[in-house]
Amino acid sequence: MALDRTASREHIAYLRRRPKVGEKPAQPAAEPETSSLSLSLGRAGAAKPTPASAPGTRRVHGRMLLTADTPTVTLDRRQSAIGSLAFEIAGPGAVGALWELTDLTAGHVDAAVGTSTSPEFGRRPIVELTRHRVVVGLRHVHELRRLLILVSGFRGNDPQRLIAELHNESTVESAHTSTTGPVVVAMAIYQVDGELVIRREDFGFDSGESAAAAYGFTISWLPPVERRG
Amino acid sequence: MSPSINLQQGANASLGELMPVVGTVVVGFGWRLIESNGPVTELVPSAIVCDADGKALSDEHLVFFNQLAAPDGAVRFVDGGDEEQIEVDLAAVPERVDKIVFVVYIDPDLRKPSTYSSVRSAYFRLTDRSGTELVRHDIVIASGSQSTAMIFGEVYRHRGAWKVRAVGQGYSTGLKGVAADFGVEI
Image 1 (cartoon, each protein chain N blue to C red):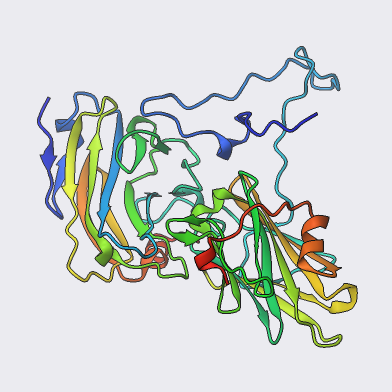
Image 2 (image 1 turned 30 degrees about the horizontal axis):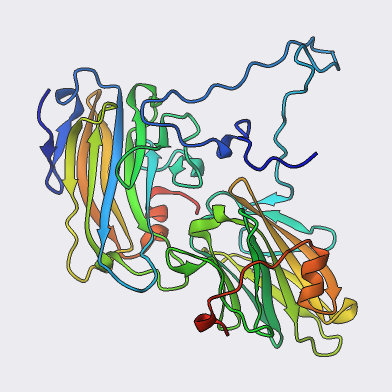
């Protein structure tokens, strides 16, 4: 069944549209009648929709290291929407990103390809490669669907440490080596109902293009000619 | 109905004298920026629901575009006029709430976030649900202001009744300074 992206998901509190002035707040839908021990789906024949909680720890304090055992963190609603999220490599190496907006427009910021910008909101690219950092503007976080952070430029088997810095100077970090490929997808970031879920990935590819293909990104946006590179 | 009151900075007014029944008020925010070709100064209206000690009841009582309503639902963003609007159902505000502070901060983006020096004018006003203006405060912005957040006004309890005050207090420390003052973890 095709995913209906236009359907309203009123059962998710933060996806409810803003009410008009004077409009009463939406009331939760009545639950189907079931006995306390019943496993049936109730009269309507459908279970009550249960919004899935975003996985992982909530809110980052200080320095948080993502590992294979604890690969995920969810930023709370304030950390997800205030200021910027900046990704950089500690030491030599390069960082880039594949981004996708909620309208499914997708592109990349990558010094190797010569693109450093993305569509603008408030005349700032929502994702930008600047001074060896990938910066994400969180004022318009609702426009962002997902983001992959790519690490390259490994020296031998030396590990690279990717650091994501939040507006309050807390960091989310992960370590990677080139053993799986010269370009490593280090982190995946998903915007889930206004909260950013950050997941350590650590999958290697021959190039950014092959990473894009593997994750289902269809690159559809390039910066205007005068601003490329 | 009384005509709208134009409050000066620091002045207050009793809502009981402006509305026949003190129920729901709509707080409207508006501004004009100085024209520029550079990145936009991103003004973000918010409300902080505070107790008698002047502290936020919880981190979730900072109401802004990514946290659209306070947990009790009495303070919430609505779609209407102005640049942004926050509706306050005063009758539904929990007893332990002493005041609701309205702050407009400049988003602290790493890339040229700017200051209030790039804001030509701004206002804060209260209307009733029908849109009738009750109170208005035109914000005083100093030339070359280095403020990156500002308390526009507050609605507060006084001897069992609700009043509104025009504040106009700037913060050069931005949202971070505001959050520290009101005990919100951002």
